[in-house]
Length: 88
Image: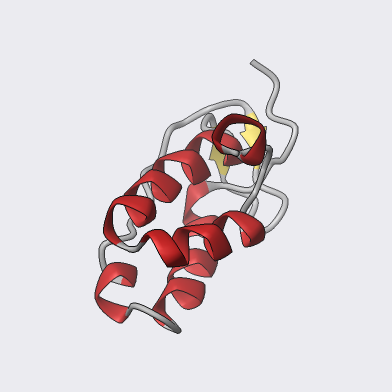
């Protein structure tokens, strides 16, 4: 699989936590990254990764949607990575 948006879950989760905390700090605390080793290098921090931004964002989007559907719409606008194709 080719990762077309090489931003790792660690970097994404940091941004997601800041965004979600503005509306729902408790939910933001539930967002946690997980590392999947791979051959692609994150363009922000340089760590190697094997999980694409789309897949990670999809999982977090579903978590946000289950907890706060209103926030989920804004979340998708910020962390789309082709999610609208599957959920809109």
